[in-house]
Image 1 (cartoon, rainbow, N blue to C red):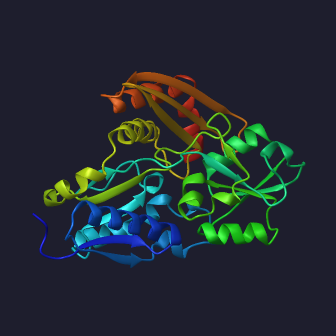
Image 2: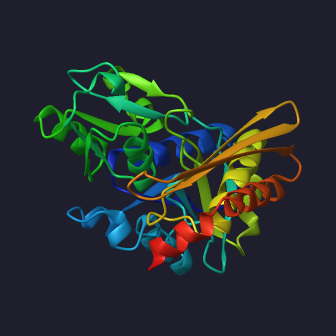
Length: 309
């Protein structure tokens, strides 16, 4: 039975967040004829502070706290997030009710002058918002000048077009969703730039006590994506993953088997630990724990301790 009032989706007001919220709204109304869905646009602390890198102001959780407050207060029924922005441990009283089918999980190389990373001459300025990307770039291309890049997708592209950077690295999913696929010079395969846990997937968050919403959201849940993302997020959870930790995790499913890769690095890229694990899609968290333990066995704890100091 449909609710007797509109469902309200809390969303950030960036172009990408609004695209994602509209996408979920349209899917819900198509799945449930007669259902009314409205958006509650909000500006989060992560959107307001643009002159400091995320790892210095509290991490990606700054993009979701205000949305969770709207859920807590009853001003909204659900929130739509880029899953890579969702902290690995949700606050008490909240739950991920659905994980949508994944868009392209890869990182994208965007440049107006060069077609791929290997073409950049020494000293070229490359912009990225992510320590994960930065550490991998520094490990493979130590001759490049990696600098911070904040702002929404349109802002980052504008900074590139103003020649503040020779190239920038963004998530391919966001560029494709916003109609900027033609700006992608090259897609970086996981061997070049291992994605963040959950990259390319959307998560729908609700208050844990809102069991009434589960039947409405269930058709949006994509089991294969969810299994991959649960394994990836467990790696990050075990290793304290956040914006302060250069860490990546990426899983793919082949039949009923998950293939999971992960890395932990120092920010300068001089030490980069990598591990792989294979296991059942029925137990993704166990696979994530296995991979995290493998990284610890290579010395990940020493890197994590140094980062926390």
